Length: 377
Ligand SMILES: *Cc1c(COP(=O)(O)O)cnc(C)c1O
Image (cartoon, rainbow, N blue to C red):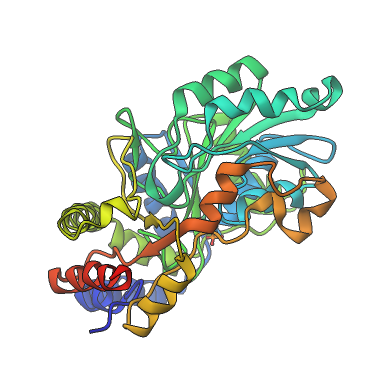
């Protein structure tokens, strides 16, 4: 049996007619950049995330970049974030010449831990503390970070909160949607995300009319009106074809999320039936709507051997993420050392994502659990 980590072909098959019709309409219009399809997707996303506005952008990475730009982050500023995320979270900070400042994560959820934020600030000198202007909590794997204390910390320290919700569309924290709690929320339509385009794309959500306006200007080289530039922006636009495709898919998202949650529940049952819950740590559901962009197990012993064993049995896995951000070569200048963020470093050694996509069959889920059991003999 083959169980790939992700297989998008079945999803495509089920939507092919709708997607063909939607994209053909774009071809017929010959209107490819922004326009009514992007606008209509933005309205749908804002409604879905419970915000007043949304701005379609070129990728999740650019969503982060343009949000920090709109928040006024520049060289000599610092931004607090987690060392345990996809590179883009910290990359966006560094691209603006600002300094990433890391704080450790919660050992249960792998999200930024509110307790470590004060610690991270205490390690800075007083002038360095004053340079910290924003914080990026990441809703990792599809579960929201502990936002209330994070927002309180941000208020106390006068920080802009930029949510990295690239893995968390539809995820909730105390009945509030990812992307609706900070100054803005950044989403990715990278094809492997829960709501994926047929290429790169992303969106920024916000409640603020002012932030919205600023994002829209920055998305087109900072021009308003055309050819008059108050700011240096960039080309961060979402194109109409991607917007048309994502609009079709958005109508199916809740159904797919329910299937991911059902698969997660089945894994829990299978793992406990097989006695694997003693050896392997399953994801802890702390918040009320985990959307399982990934199902990440923690394997304290022989993670890489298990991964090879599963690969040989036709089961796809991935390590998110093998090197924490504070130990990346490009951030050596920040001066962090191994041991600085022990929880993140441990997660990097132990984490293994197993297949969770909506179309998996019961037989496939059983095969994954049984193969893991076989490995532990
Ligand atoms: C995918 C991802 C991004 C970047 O999104 P792209 O669309 O690939 O640029 C940023 N942050 C996190 C946490 C992600 O998972």
